[in-house]
Length: 406
View 1 (cartoon, rainbow, N blue to C red):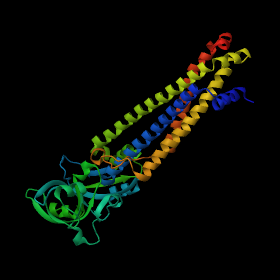
View 2 (view 1 turned 60 degrees about the horizontal axis):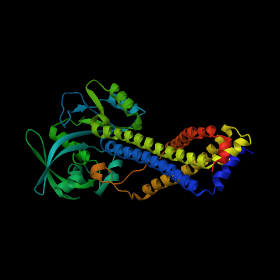
View 3 (view 1 turned 135 degrees about the vertical axis):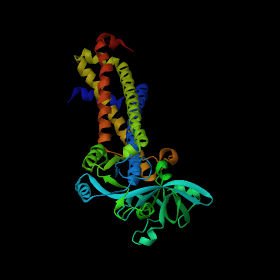
View 4 (view 1 turned 120 degrees about the vertical axis):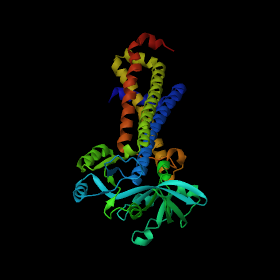
């Protein structure tokens, strides 16, 4: 039988000291709350970053390829995508898909209101998976009917509200050129991305409209949007794409096009580290306090064990076993609380956010097993290592004085 483990079990389970029981419960609650907050913090931050990234890259792709020139306007210069570049892009194992696009500044006039907008032209190869998830009214452009597709348009909910428009409405759009070129469009769908920079900046229409307005050749486009398979490898993949392009083309990653959003997301990691450090400190302080009080209340027992020949390390192990038992209970309850609240939020979205400020309507949750595992291990190991310090007080206890201690 393990002597130290047996004594620790008797102390932990059959202790009848009211004051120490209260302190122990507070310590367990401290570890529980600290772990739960850490689990939820990491899950929310990761979920938040993933959701925002998916919103931006879902609409604009991960990498944009345009013509290399000095044009800094919203309207890209046209170019012809040669067969060799297409072959290189298709051969690249890191690329999921790509499609052509073009943009052109325009002004929408409707209900005695006007709104500046950026018309984004796409063709039948465009992937609608992402937009379809965010359509709140209507449907997508029907490219099967080429004549109807020239008049169909998708606008954001932000623009629709500002101009008092709804699905099925007609309006006039004026394209900005040397002379304003009016075109009549019909709204076939309204989407809500939730990122103001995108919602207020773009409408989706047919790429052939821009080609006709600019007198481009049938095979000329304004750019290519590329979606990669692993966003975590964005920089090396973007660099690889850039190196494979001909000299007349250049590429930009989504982080270069929207540096303010991704810089903001990067700052969230700093907040996460601060929260983790503070919560670990709270948990450690609670356990140190509990162990100190247990040692003081068990001074008589320490003296008796020393009188019977127990070594300082043996007695220290008794209290460390006891502390490990309490930490284990705290970690178990912390996992139940943190994961329980997280899964509840995933199922109900009960905790809402102001979408205009946070780009999301609810607090997102993204759990990773390795994150939870590392938090548990780190908390347990750190607490036990720090608890070695107060347990050293046992070596200072004199058996004779301890037995007399009341």
